Image (cartoon, rainbow, N blue to C red; front, side, top):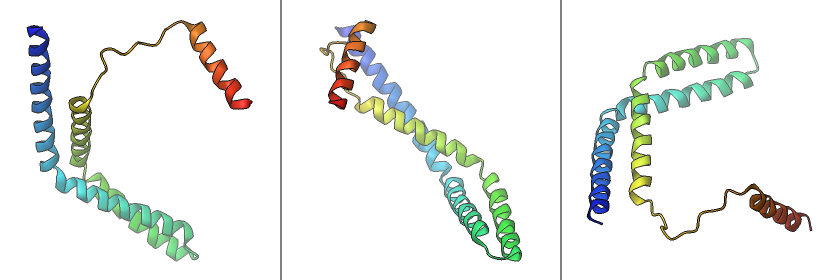
Length: 127
């Protein structure tokens, strides 16, 4: 009983440490993340306008704007670190708040039981 409690406390401390590090990394890379979002928005807008431009000159101008936005987006590579940190924060949040029912009955791995369930669902759906 005492060992279980120590393991849970150790997991909580590890999650807290991982969450704190991920939050700091996300905070430090917030600038490139905002820059990436803006440049990707400009790239998307330029792409849409390029497809709808009636003249060839308009298409060339929007394509050049799109190329400039693409280069600017590529310069914001540190934003990928921020995205990974945001994902780690999400996983830590899910693990921290995750509750498991220890008394739940696990589903059977018997393929015939699963087949019977699926067959009943199909019959219910099509009747």
